[in-house]
Image 1 (cartoon, rainbow over the protein chains, first blue to last red):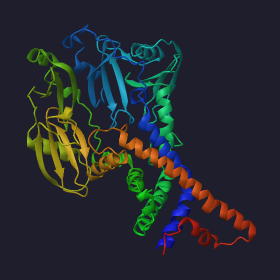
Image 2 (cartoon, each protein chain N blue to C red):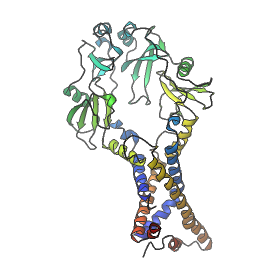
Image 3 (tube, rainbow over the protein chains, first blue to last red):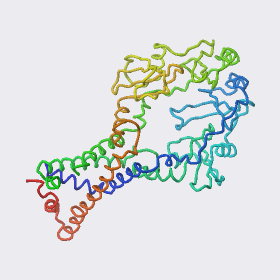
Image 4 (cartoon, chains in turn purple, orange):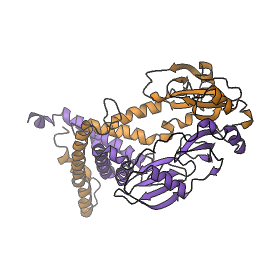
Length: 242
Length: 241
């Protein structure tokens, strides 16, 4: 039995030794980093609290909005830059970051609103408290590196501050997806390593980590058996008596 | 290894569990049907104008479905309300029968309802307290699935099964959070992870000298496949007797 235990241990260590080093090191990084910084919200502020410009009862009647835009699953109130909107969900995902389809209707004028570059950058600015200026705006439709789980088209607004802040605004709803910056990307890099998520899918259910996890099980268990075996044979006595 | 060997086993077992089970499955996404029932505007016969007369404090008004009937949902202060949009009948908080009907409407898997219980305080750890009050509806199926239905909105607010509960448990063990919250920054983890770092490094050195180097030198000599038994000796002296 010990023959096989050692053989397994040696070969498993050969296969996953380096990854094990990466796992433990990145795990140590998660343990010691400043978790507040790693959220990427250094320059995020809550939008200025607004008085109700128009009372909800004086907004356009919901019934007429729904008649104008049928095939709605849910209608909710939304506020963009302190202005009231109706958000009509036409296709509802299980979560907000899953594929959703929205219509955004100005609740005062009834105008169908598209979150264009201008509106998106204004929403971003309202959420931003840092010293930077906007340098670039881009509409991302897939593989959003900072938000890999976000499956909806999203505006990325880059600021030229010391942290290289990016602000993300969902195109369909105008929702502020979040802020990201170099601190968050630093942590994200180690998450990528820890999860072996080389395709930036924001997932730890990939085939390479499953294979490595399987081999690691054998390495850990064989090592454990080996240690217990040595312990029972008095291998650790010398150390313990020192 | 004597000191942290157990933790290595815990890390590898809990890590393997977390990567092998698809996270969407863990979240219980397969437990519910994502209905896309559309609102029929002609059914909004109780007008929002009347609603604001009857509930002048109403805020955050929304329109949605409760299974197949149109409903208004709104807040008064922190309290949530739900009205039938055809006649203005107050539907919230929903009773046990409605909760069961809603749960069965959304439940996608096999098995019948076992029971429903109303939770108004001290939620189980798998339910956030912001969803209270909520009905917990248990289903008779593998993994003991449960749907939580908000009593005031009639929406499915949380879905859980044993695979999630086990995952949560595994995660805590993985980050050595042996007391309460989701705290990856604890001292215990730091010390063990630091020791583990040394252990892995020394393991790598051993791997180099005991596995990689002998394989190369022996291959050069005569490509002998029995090398590893011979090279085993120094590593396990005293181990096997």
